[in-house]
Length: 300
Image (cartoon, rainbow, N blue to C red):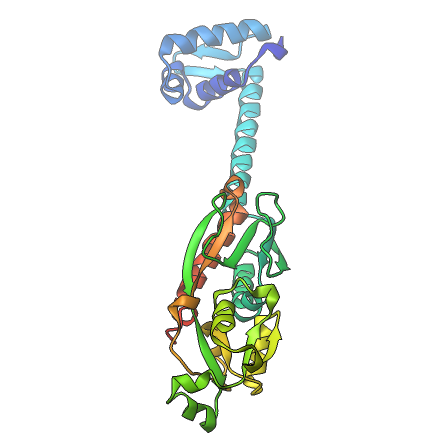
């Protein structure tokens, strides 16, 4: 017979026990008095014994009734504990996030942000994939992409957190400072440039279109490579402001060029944007990158 009992039957018996009668139980369960009376009779018929003694002072549980009420209490506690665990998981998300970005952004901008995120969310692990080629988020090659682009992809969702500025830099010395007095003379200097692998970058196109090939002393497939080359005096060249402005060995030779600028995005796939760990990561990184906008946008 007990197999025919429902969870609501246990709740009803507990409510009558807690309130000492049908009226209080009906109010607690948001039903009317007659419903409680009728259902109690059905439950007692199912279990084959009375669950309450009817007294002038109210309803007093029998041994069987007290046992049902006690079991209902334990079930409520289990449900409450389960709800708390679910809520805790939402507040403190966990798991792994695969992030794709470039070596330049990773080393000079994102690592401190990742460290701060880990301090706030120690249960989330980061798998960072470095590369200049964008991974396919639709195929789940990565969960989140932090990239510089003017065409981030129609199938992705996210935020444009800043505009990544570039300018022409040279080694910080008196000779180079003299060159800035005559901008046309800069095109007679030796240059360093991004290699063919990064020919799509706006700054790379500028050098290709404005600087004679014989003036290009060195090409590199890495932004970090040309940064070091400029600082060592191999030539002048376009660099991201957030890197070059923090190097005392470099100086701007021209203001940031709007034609070099690209958007800086934090992106994910629509199917996983509401996953708690992804949402927490994107919110944190977006806020931190926006806090660094003056540096990223060349306003330092």
